[in-house]
Length: 290
Image (cartoon, rainbow, N blue to C red):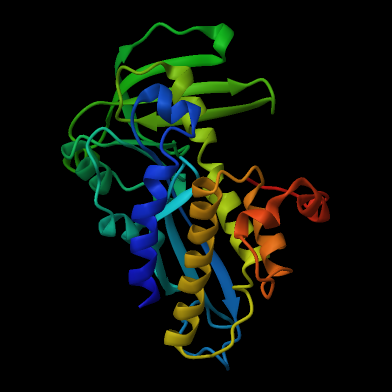
């Protein structure tokens, strides 16, 4: 029931936040970040959540629309579920970008995105075997060291992903680190690919926020249904706050809104009155992730 209610809230939240992310607005498309987080559980109390021999856990897999950090796809599985298999459960939209951690690299599944004209952006693994087909000109002032069109080298790889894709070497002057990205978008500026991948951290911030503020690390029941219900309630609460913030045009972070609501649950007043400057000062020292 709460999972279905969350889908209703997602349909309300997404249009309200459209255009909020500058990069997505510049590209005139939707940018998604996909990742998972693990929540450790006691093996004796949660025997259904298989993970390792010494401990149990569950995983929360999220596809996050970076416009407003709205989770459009959420799946709760036992801890031993392989992350990459969740890529099969996503419906890919033509023209949209999917930012994925390199732990999810699977070229058979990436080719599925290619066929559906969706774009993936991820970091390349060091052992990637490839042949260079085309070398593009680079702007070293932007930190781009290499920009190449490549193909997988061996027969097994070519069978999984038979067409060319792109490999970009980038130096981040801020962190003083080198990054290597791969993507199937062949024409966009190389520096834009680097900027896109940085947006993937929004899903990490989402996990951090929801764990810290919505208490999903402590569960009121031990059954699989009880745990999943509590997680979906947390997702619904997050979406309600995101909708509330936009509809009432509240000039406060999600964290501030949650804190004010938590201390005002039994006050009978117009919701917007809670967010006057004086009330907001109560939680002004709280760290805002969004």
